[in-house]
Image 1: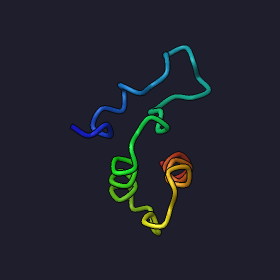
Image 2: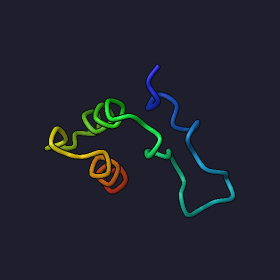
Image 3: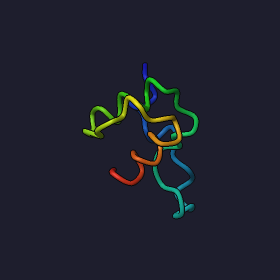
Image 4: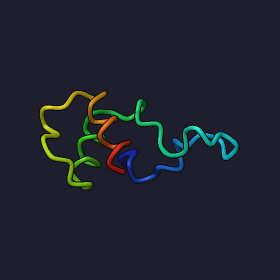
Length: 60
């Protein structure tokens, strides 16, 4: 099953308010791409993993 189906699995501890949510750095490109597609991020095909992560975090 793809990692985007279980975002809590990658969340930091509840006490860490700086970074709540999934840790996209551990996701593979296919999962990042699929989530970007689900969220309607345009030009995702030409993005690197780092760019996909940034887009997902800023457009969440």
